[in-house]
Image 1 (cartoon, rainbow, N blue to C red):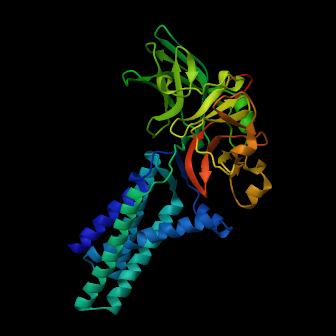
Image 2 (cartoon, helix red, strand yellow):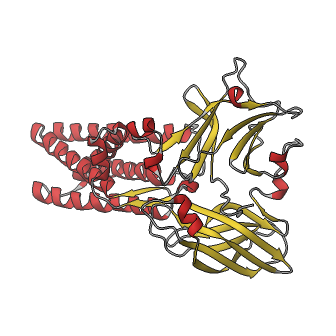
Image 3 (cartoon, rainbow, N blue to C red):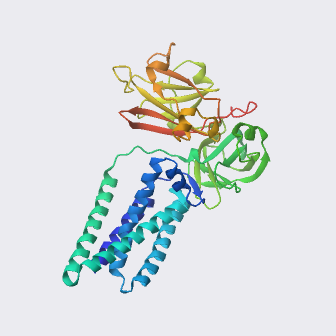
Length: 421
């Protein structure tokens, strides 16, 4: 009975840690078998640590299931528990995929199953070396250690204050180039596609800011957008990713949601109203009080009133605006992290490729890139969006002592032939 309780505690902890605890993120699967192992053997130490963790996580599974399984036949035990481990691991991976809380990988299933087999052999070794009451005491002691570790993981995870951010911009591209909402009619034009997953036809929904009502739009998808493909040019074809969408909606403000096949509806970070396209709820957004072209004609991409910071995009430049309550460092070392993802990894700087970083990092001190101007109580930093490679997603935020203080992911607004304004 005690062993069964230990097993149930373990199963809950694993599901909580791998699925329930995680925020909704991007929806992606990697079906190439042993892909992570190949990268590990090529020198990727981060993946090595991840693989070891996946193996270690399932060692208790093999041991605890062995302790509650009535059979004493070793071959039967191995067969039953290995099959059960595969099913449990597949369940976790499938939940991560469809709930958009992780990456589906066959390698994880393999690593988990290997860990379960190690757990079986550990139980077998204990059974051989100990007998009678001593055997029961040793098995109970090991099971208790596993349970204490599980509870420690749960308690530590519940109390952890990790900086989290919506990462869905790394998984798919979405932009509305034109929007019309008037007299009960709505029309949208733009493009949408997933970077590393079979396309599929998405659905667009409007979520009313007034009453929470969701409106499904009629959507024509697959329109030719060679300008989009030219920018993101890679081994995938992003030509037929344009769309038009229309429907009936009362005048007001709506958040645009996208639903890919076999996923939940996701916020696109885009809002529409009779005033056009905007990127934050109108009633919650307050622009910095600066008389500047990059504010008047720019597009807000990050709004952190809790951190006293805005990020605006104006053409191909980004502007970080901080008010007088921003936590600047007294020694002028206020580090603003600035990282980019791309579909054109081969065009990243050589130093990134040498370290197998598939993203670029050009963060720097706010004070170094601060620009002069009549900005009143605000300070402004300016950086260019790189042009040597396509930019799919940007993460920026305040970085101190090797840790994020806050961060936000966002997509740049693309100006293909004047679109996106």
